[in-house]
Image (cartoon, rainbow, N blue to C red):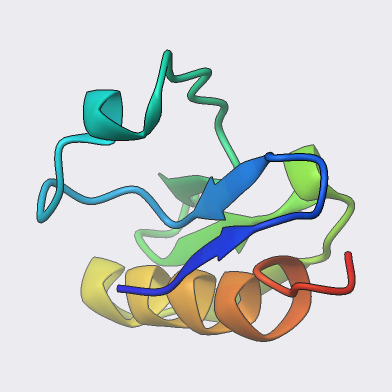
Length: 81
């Protein structure tokens, strides 16, 4: 897991349960994306909550989740952001 701490003390990470986020202070957890099914049974990853694109469609949910994490890691989880 990558954790970015900015010079003003903001902590940015892609949430998972491998660490207790409360150990970093009082968390403010916000949604970075929405992985949702389409009407035709495919999946998309909508990254608009962090100013990103809609990725997909993907044939299975796990592909949409992997694309979501990849995009967030490369474009949002950046020390220079």
